[in-house]
Length: 458
Image 1 (cartoon, rainbow, N blue to C red):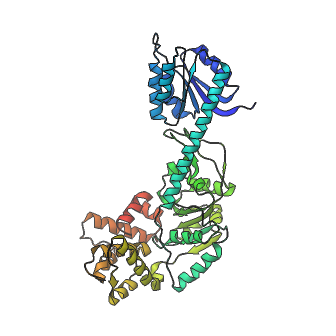
Image 2 (image 1 turned 30 degrees about the horizontal axis):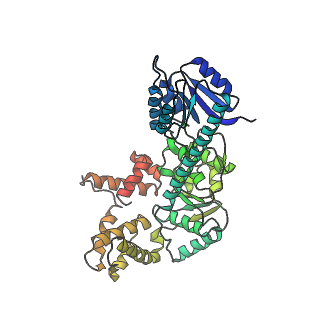
Image 3 (image 1 turned 90 degrees about the vertical axis):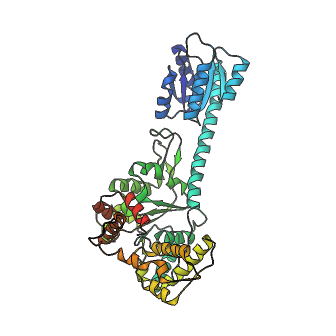
């Protein structure tokens, strides 16, 4: 009979009991550990993945009440709520057994035990542990799916010649399984284009999972993307399904891929080449079936620089390469975008959809929109919130103040937020929107720079 791939921990202050249990159970389970002192339980369980704990109830000399067992049962339930615990004692009675089960023990064993009964009890406990793990894994996966499904859904809008040409290319590659790399400035709509490609693909009925690579902490990169087993590292109290596995069967959108450090690029490349993921702390690979759409605001010259980006990863990502034009190069789309977002925010704030005067529309169309569609969207929302009448004018969009942010801050301005806003805008302009280089120039992390860009709508 093959051994069960499980880990049993026996806790008892009697070395003979521990040895007997280990000799019996090691023929049934892959791993059997012993612990003579229950005070070592929290540290042991924090470092080791255990399926079932077989826990004695009496550790205090002369005390046969079982209170020690109840105490440690409660402690373990609080710190490791999914852990399966079987209590055992030589001083058993029906009342004590009932109390143990009510307190949360999975089962109750009387010493000296019957070998057959102990093995059967632990087999059942192990099956329960596996069921709890599967339930926890499904819960984590469902949570990841809910996050993806609950993300804001917008439409990809554009009828200018440049956008028509782009959409023709996107429509041709969408039905294939080819990986796609989308280039474009901040706020130009790279994620919306990725969603449009997904919607036209054979994977449209499956998940679209978006990940901002610039916002993931380097220390959590593998856990976020690949997942981890319970106990894989300190603090990993439950198993976690990685984003890659959660996106299985669907499309994975890797935003700001150009900000991924070189040592993490290697790990991502290995997964894409092998088409499988190994969660942190696990040894069993999980097959991966996802289509990759990546995006970056970095100049293409950065991607082809071997010191900044691995060329073998670039080849994996850019089977098809699409470039989103900035809003200033497709001004014909500005009226369409304005009309769409006016409808969106009028409905959101339960107001009548305002009109835009002809002069205002001309001014908005002539404006360069440094933040592209994102900045236009914020400007429309602000105008809808603050407008008094049924018609919007140029002053409702505060274009003049936005234009000034593109110029260096005058030396006589001492307002801290204004100085910071201008510094961020200058750094982004200096490096053509490259987040990594701009953040380094400003002495900020990428995440801190993202927060300031969002704050100042840059």
